[in-house]
Image 1 (cartoon, rainbow, N blue to C red):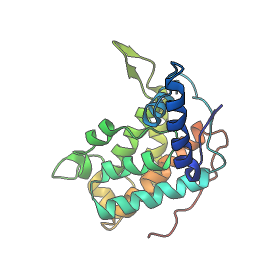
Image 2 (cartoon, rainbow, N blue to C red):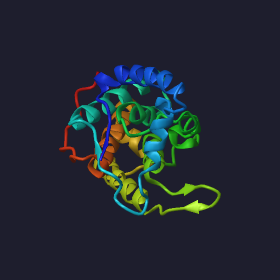
Image 3 (cartoon, rainbow, N blue to C red):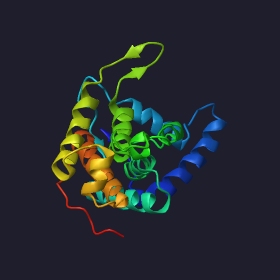
Image 4 (tube, rainbow, N blue to C red):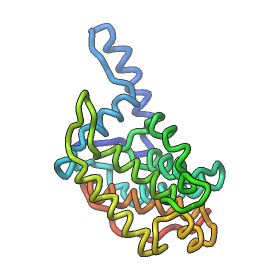
Length: 214
């Protein structure tokens, strides 16, 4: 079982790793920096299986609430629903690496990535990128693994969209949500956090209602 520090202890743990790194240097040891460790953790999810149970210290409900709040806040402040959904998940979920390349790649996917709004909601797309990054097929010289698990999880997110909006298309979602994109992004991040925790955490998260909008 992989253990992660709670959000309250992240800075302390980071400082401790820096000290250990300096101490280990003289002994010829290598201590991976925080970001690199996170990326390695993300890569251990087995696309062909159910993935390892991650211990998030009983913080499942806080992670889900944080995903909603951050998604709502980022979309309201910065715009760009795909990036904002992805960023909220990266910042809320301790076993999802904050990969800058992945974030940048989502920059053109908001609003259905077209001027018509007739393609997928950016919140849905950004969330799917997080799912695929965590447990999708890899390319290491050749294509490796299976996309089955990532497809299964994205379909769970699709079901949430269908139940609330009747569609995943940007135009339909915006109409049903009355143009409240921060709420759409907050819910997309919340639903995805719930799905990922149900799949990968040591203790499956209970279903939760969205917190009030900030």
